[in-house]
Image (cartoon, rainbow, N blue to C red; front, side):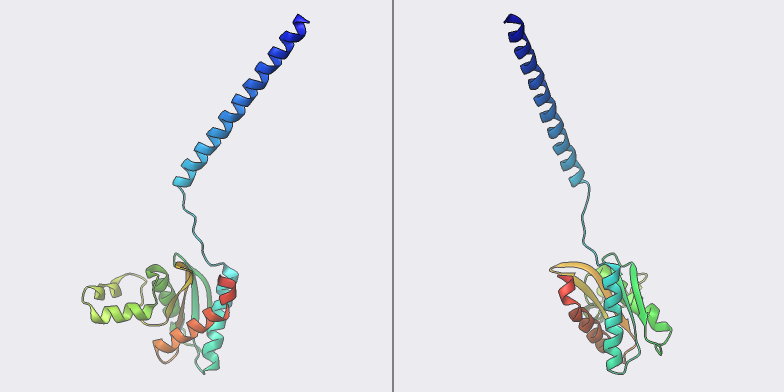
Length: 179
């Protein structure tokens, strides 16, 4: 009987040690996870498949109005994901649409608003000198709530306001996929 009591006590000690080990491991994992979480950042960005669809929708919207344009879509950082050019669009429109998208993604604002600010404020006028920026209407951020997940730039219509209208139509067309 004494030996069975010793075994029970010995087994309880082993169970207690295992519990302590498990609690220690779990605590360590939680501490490591919180430390890791403090040093990382999660961001949402537009997927390439959606970027292609938005660019195509913008070119189609402008084509329906008789304008031969180029449409570029970037991710949230301004990196080009999609570029679509109408068959008869000028070759310079590809760079212009890409720069408008980059400008909008970088600033998280429509380029028409930036152009307006630049025309009204000597301080803001320096924005035209930022490498890669094109301060003309036609760049529109793509947002989920308040977060910018990408941007579109359209160039080639006979006015930046028309470029911007095509960009907004494209975003509206895929609106259900952005939410």
